[in-house]
Image 1 (cartoon, rainbow, N blue to C red):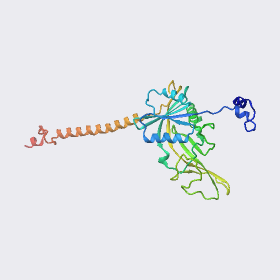
Image 2: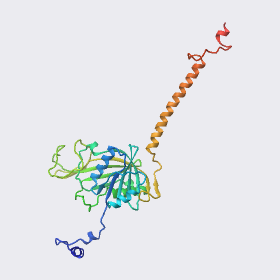
Image 3: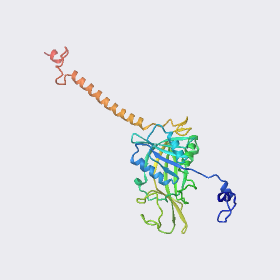
Image 4: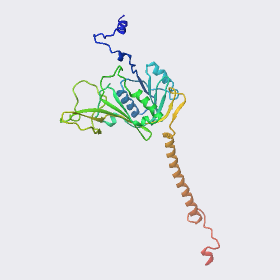
Length: 325
């Protein structure tokens, strides 16, 4: 009866008026399932842990044993009540592919991940509260083509932390930037640093009082973006990079969740296997040319009788020893 009374009552339990617009507004219920396949390296594993610490609405699961039957991820997402999946697929112990999907209906985005640098490796001075919500900053290039709008929507659903998440804290203290350059998506994470002009900044390594958990580590300074000049007594806002860093190359977009027809394919993408194969062929071609030159040089020396142990030199009628004998 208490739940029925609360639903029909126009006032909250503490006596304040209930906001009808807030009740009628649809809630953003996003949960992200993060997991990887077998064969990931330590760098890939640390990247997964960094993203899990930055996204309080995510759930990390054990490694998936298969790389061919990816439709099983839909069942895992339904089991854990997640409507977003981020899957790290490792190939040959060196290549990393990231899948973003919206189960059970899709779509699905497959991307090649390069230039991975974890927070522990970068060791920037930027820091943020664990469980805080990020501000998502997208480049205007995302609105210029249809497939980039789909990529932007999937990134928003995966990296956008809802306000109603269970582990979220009511703070917004960092920015996640998504920039398109050269057909790739560059991802960076920055802390929103506020400093009062006229006062000295705290020394590096100084920590604030309290038991707040931090998602990053502070050691070496990172690049601080320039901020607008503030008058004495005003607050100046700047951005300090936290990490991690990664670059994503969209490969294919599927209509369904880990399946279905292909609605976009990047024709300019060259797989790392093809690049390594071309390098091996180029090295083999150089070796073959050197081997052919060596054989040709040996044949010419043999014809001139300059190679010992290959028989005497044939004397013809125009030889000097015959003409002037």
